[in-house]
Image (cartoon, rainbow, N blue to C red):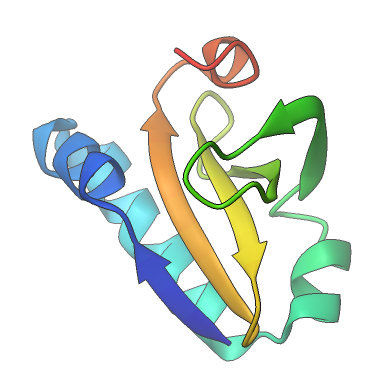
Length: 99
């Protein structure tokens, strides 16, 4: 699976505390080893559709991925297929609200 990383995700990872940076790195390694159907069903990633949320730049449906128990990433899937990591949210509850 091809992974694209948006600047907002990259900046949030760089600004995060070390445990979250390491968790994000582990998630990236895992994502690269899986195809899209495996990502959708992987129990640890908790790939979930964010109902009613669309990525403004592409018009693609947004999803959340678990990075840690408290942190999640907002992502979308584009043609190719590629998984686009859009943003990182240290507080999981804030991710679905777009914060």
